[in-house]
Amino acid sequence: MTPVIIKIIAGVISTVGFAIIFRLKPSHWVFAAIDGLFACFFYFLFTELIGGNFWPNALAALISAFGAEMFARVLKAPSTVFLLPGCIALVPGGTLYYTMNNLISQNYTEAAHNLLITVEVGIAIGGGIIVASILHIAIYKFFQRFRSK
Image (cartoon, rainbow, N blue to C red):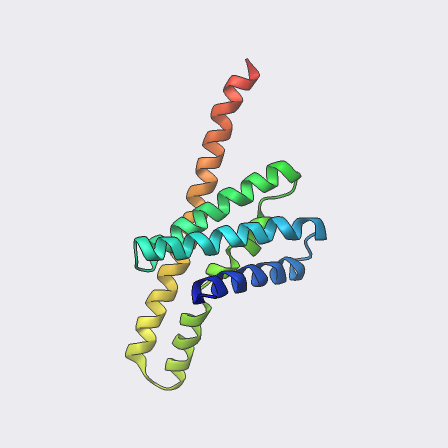
């Protein structure tokens, strides 16, 4: 198997693990895993197409948040139930680890570089989730106007 497929599988497994830790209903584990699959797949796709750190994470978080909103509507559950495990694979744990490791090793230049990447990815994930939430509310209100008539 290619390394990307292995990383996607690991992302899905981590999503299910966090779904268990967050005490999701076992019937919701599959949907959380699908949301994590979307996040991982689109992250690697956008990394290949766009490159960089910000946009692949922002767009993957946006897609994951839309998936979480859809699952929440269908399954009548809060969207955070699917969003938190779904986005967990996007969290920049590696760069955070290297930031702390370089701080301890007193390699401040490399620590600052890794810290900036960590913050950039965190802002991208948060921004993608916020944009998806705003768009979801706008789309919902748009269709509510037609539904009430």
